Image (cartoon, rainbow, N blue to C red; front, side):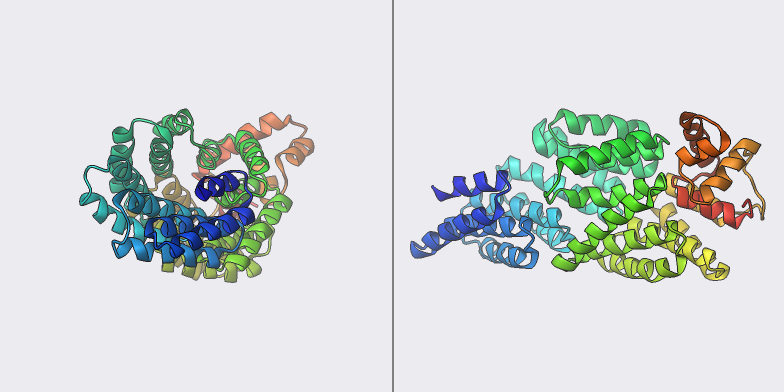
Length: 423
């Protein structure tokens, strides 16, 4: 009877109260030697503590609950519930290595429990998440497709559609990505931050900014902000709002320092490096980006490894180390090519440059003028004031510049401008 109260507290974001009630339920379970109750209460307590900011303490409880699962001490229904909830909690906090291990274990268990269809569907959705991070995108798409086709609706279908949308976006298949993000919303899920990243890639920066500012406001004090903040940093940098990007970066740093989780540390280091680079501080950016790359390499997340190497190359280029920058650019290009990340591949190839200095990619005189101001750190509004244009016209010029240079961010356009001596 205590367990519904635990989940009511969690839904109300009353995590300390949830953890206390769950602890009481676990004590009762131990007194009466009810393994199912102990595991259910312990994993709920762990998830409440994780959301309360006590990540390591919460993760220890999740691991302890999984001991009973792997020892086959629980009934099949409780086993499936604990598996799925622990995996979800690991993803939520960014502990992807644990999530990957438990997902593989859940897959084996589901194969032996063919009648428990609900857990099979959730297993497929979690497997798609793991494969997407690991860079096996074709296989991830297949797992996601099977998950939403079997379930037909609900949050598991939304989760599967989101993974599909992300892979389509990363591959440059924006039409299918758009359709899948809509399916996420239709099934009750949240298409952010992926949809905002899609709008950024399409050149619609105003929509991307508005979406993530709204999403961050809604998630104030929620663990779900962790999934939004990295995208928010990228999008604020795309509109040269260094102050907002740095504020989000500081929040990521605080989370990383408190949790000690490698995923948070990698995101924080990458964000710090990207902000310093955009702020004209390449010397400060280089060590942060190197730290981020090592962490992504340890976590085996190839797309983030390549993104970090491309940013590191830009920072090295800015301090005059062209040879090392070229090696980093080429390493990033190799990973993007292997993944099939078409937009990133086009962007990094434009930065590598094969046409010699001064290549303009058919930029008009006005676009060159806008690019030079953009590279100086000017916002679209200040460019509009400087050139006596409407802000909407400047937005269009910036979108055209990105398309012609094959880049998706202001920092990439700036690096291209400096590399080809356009400024």
